[in-house]
Length: 90
Image (cartoon, rainbow, N blue to C red; front, side, top):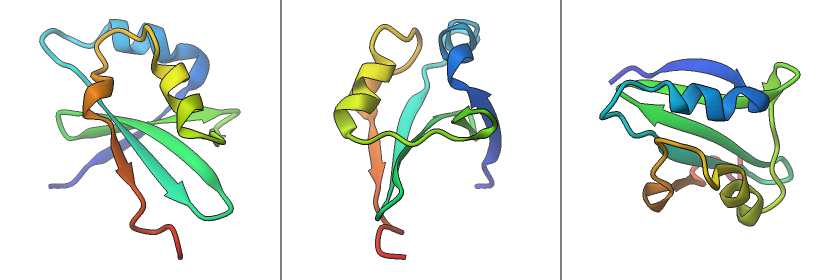
């Protein structure tokens, strides 16, 4: 399956998720890269929305930071969070 990637500024996260058509619920995807921190994307219906700041992927320091970012965000199922560490050593 091809996944369309869309950039979304962090400041627009709540608004974007609040306007997902029901019954859509986004799944958070955290990507870890050694020495580069963690990035967060939301996946739904073949789309992947990458959280950015100033147009560049936002880097989180810890998984706790990611969970805090997602706290109280509507239509996101944090219990289905996926951690992608496949490229950690690359």
